[in-house]
Amino acid sequence: MERRNLKRLTVGSKLPIIITKLEKLRVKKMFKLSNRSKENLEGVDKRIIEIVELALTISVIDFGIPKYGGLRTAGDQRTMFKKGASKCDGIEKKSAHQSGLAFDIFAYVDGSASWDRYHMTQLAAAILQSAALLGYGLEWGGLWRNYVDMPHFQLKE
Image (cartoon, rainbow, N blue to C red; front, side):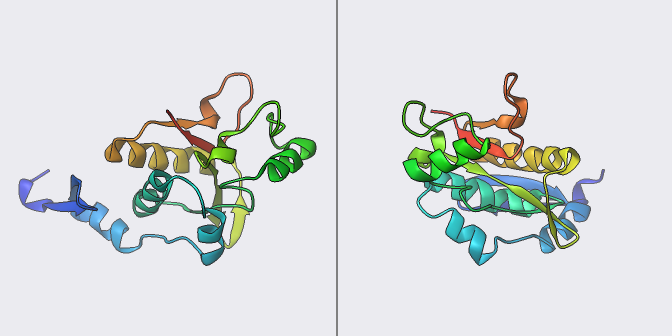
């Protein structure tokens, strides 16, 4: 690749990123969070917002944040537990969602929500890359051994 095809960008005011002309086209078509997804992230740690916003510029698949995908009350967590959507009951075993340190996603493909393994893996790559570029430790539930939770991400403390 020739050096003249490279352009230097700054993400926020922290990190320089080198991209090619081909990648520049992808950035022009970046996705953005819907108002509903923004509402679903209210109250989470500001680092999560930074990670999600950067991931939307990197990802080749659009994504959103489902209801209860951000900060959860103990009651919200209990509801998720009763549905079988979480291993944490919200009282004896608390979720990282309850302290605003976790978020869940869904892929948005062809006008519909998707939790397809391929889509989740593609999104995880963009989200984990974003966290690394920003210098934040992030854990993906898709890599857990005992309970695989592909839509789930949480900050490492």
